[in-house]
Length: 295
Ligand SMILES: [Mg+2]
Image (cartoon, rainbow, N blue to C red; front, top):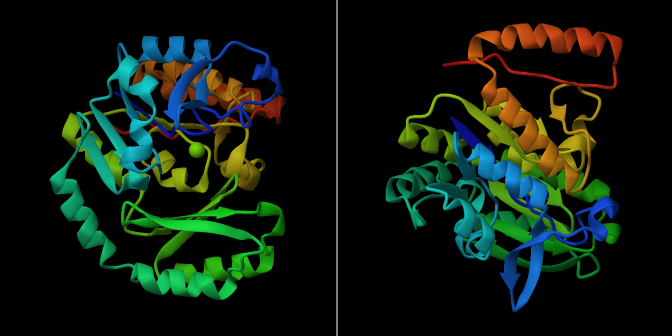
């Protein structure tokens, strides 16, 4: 069994993202950057994850570069993940070391997407210092761009998204960052590689941004925080199950739900689906979707 999870704004939160309910609460510092703690986890989320890790393989899956991932000392020290997917699927770490087989595969897959230089040239045609603060080519795989979100020209960005699709690249906006990512690199592909390496059968996953959709699709059970890009795009579509709470409380909710899902024997999942469906029929506010279990 694998629990594959996005990190930022799914399991760990900046002070700004944790939400009012946690502002005065005691939280665990998890990331150190330039001498300061900048990301946190709730003690309850940590406790639940420690418990879950006793029976399921916890696989962190992040858009962070390897270097940015390594800053999260708490995950490393507490959970010692055997596998992690970083760089939005561009790297699979085995005991902290990039898997060369996966790197070869990614390089082949990248050849199908437009050259990174051409992509940033196209972006430069809509970019202006008014709303684009800086950008970098992360791990030589994708661009992360720092924005002034309020000044971002929405129509031009949506047109650019379509232009990118023709170049086999994707666009995702999270907080004050925009990511431009080639199609050959995805969190879901990275996870399926880990599934093979670990010889695992059932996967539960969680994530909050559009870059997490491939991860959720690769799982047998998926749950999404009640905030972020996916929630904004799909709150009414019924495709995803959402946590009850937004902000840092979402981390506690989703680990608890996934623990329940792992505890249920696969054969009873169809029955559970029927029960959930009956509950949804009487209370349309609860949107619960479960994918059928596939061995
Ligand atoms: Mg996230």
